[in-house]
Length: 336
Image 1: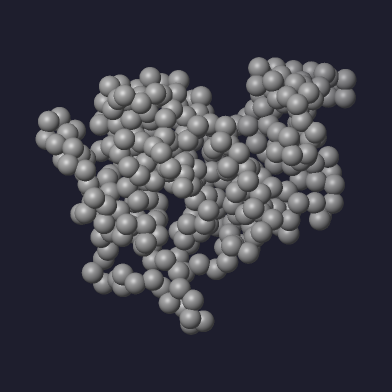
Image 2: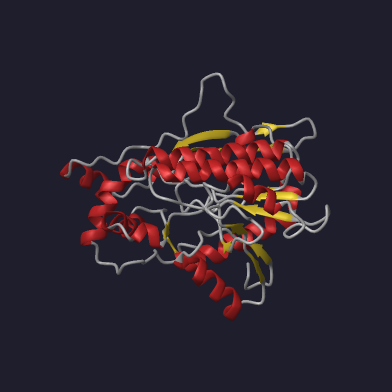
């Protein structure tokens, strides 16, 4: 966003290497404007004479940050467009606390700047979430008609079993057809995909589910919300774990799964976010609140995979270790 000339109010811890790198990057490689919060040293009783500390801790200073975002320094007028991007990530239970802090800030900013606040999230496919009917039926077709013979052979030779996702199953009392509205238009019916991963754990799942909840609440209140699913990617945090890195390398052997490199994924999701915000006609009323996440989602093939993602993990790890493709590869024409 800075490279595109945007004004970005960013949050980073004081005296951290990330803060230093961000300042250097904004100054030397972008045409944008970087705004950073500042705090007075709490150990000094005289606030006026105490040294100013640049940066802030998201979890410790959430109330201060919420007020700063809606202050004239960041938001000069009531007509100023605020796009609040909740992108912080930490390992373990700290990620839940960071997510709660971001949610409190989002709630405050939406309340105090109601007419021109948009929210942006990157929703994870590693949650229990809704998928369109058409994608679920394609997963069923792949399971019944086009499963390679070696998938079944592999599951019989190892303790790992490729389990069907069963996203195509529905309640006997529901209609499998698309929802038809009074105006004659249709919308995909909702099916449910269990994308939970034991490796990512409950803290990650809870954090991402909270963001889905905030997206639906904000959209129901009339705010523009960009909340597409972001694909599995070879981010620094993912490839820092040898087991996860190997599993990522092995997943493309199980079509139609695709793993993204970090840079193209970042560019793609930025473009989609800007499209969602400035072409906000997609923020329409949905027949089901979970249909909000159908728009512009980049699921990396998970919606159309016939297999439960947790059952894919062990076999993809094996392929990542013994496969003949180089690290970071993708199948030919995978993005077609």
